[in-house]
Image (tube, rainbow, N blue to C red; front, side, top):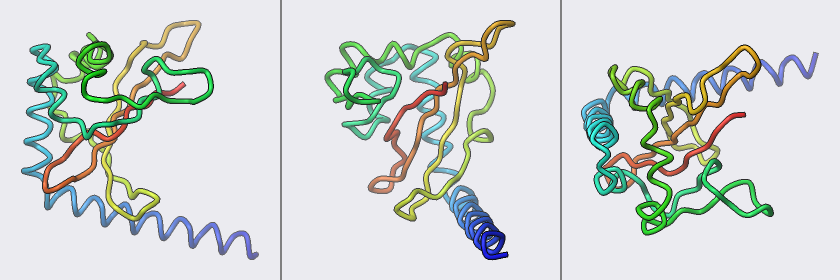
Length: 155
């Protein structure tokens, strides 16, 4: 009985946090739409400088080249502009951005209790022999502006 109560409490708390962050998303809809419009424009026009302005450097990136001793790379603005921007200018992301990005942004609460937002896009499309790969970008509000703070991929 005790494990069931703990599970129910966790689910209720998680639902409440997600609801709080969904409300925050609605309150910040103009800021988030400004972010998504700038992001879309930067990617569709291969504008790496504009794209870099949307990142809160340094950012963590699990699909950027990294050492064998870690699961991610820490990307600086210079490294992003030199070598990593191409990972964010993929044909699949450009395909996703043909539609409005704002509705697919998911609201969540971070382990620190703040609201974070994320969206995913295919990096490798599924096939008959493989499930494909999906990249995700995590967005947080910093100094009144939404910024990308991490990029990660599954599987």
